Image (cartoon, rainbow, N blue to C red; front, side):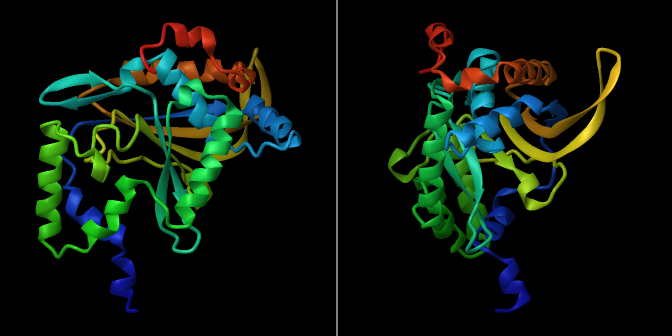
Length: 279
């Protein structure tokens, strides 16, 4: 296989069709979170035999923060109007070990599940994905990537107009307003990157994409004293059509507060679910 052939993977062929030169208004934000309590929580859960990771923790924390604190993020836009989604589903990016390609798994109604449930669901999803049993949306990737240029470009332009701008759905083919969940979460630290600036996937119609970056110890000030804490870099890209910087600030503040109450992830949030607009 030539270098040119190895570079043109199915995903790269799709990317050349769907991404235009930068022209849309996007918002980017980065925050460092003290994950001392997250580490303690992960250590305790692993002693219990539950293989909790930073990804599973933040999939849960982000889902609950969106559902209960900043529901404005759980929306999509079509025909010039913003619409709420029915549930908070998180799309988690995973690395396929055999091909080094990225795939994804969906955790539905993540805001209403315990950490043990999320860990189990993600474990099963990762096994299926790595065995080639991807969800319907991702299964379309190889089919569409086989189209010759410029048909790929025309096809994605058509799909964007039909399923995003006009709001039509084709659920049997995995093409509907919830095909990519409520937000995408990806751990780029596992790929060797300290931090990054995510892209809004044009066909996803998401208000938010989140990247988990570098984890390391740094000196910070707490109660006027310099202490060493382990910090996680979290970066987000927002669709400015649906949300703005104020929503991002509210989300990051909610995350910090929920980290301090991280043991709540072991319980179904029954009280919060009573007033939650999502199932």
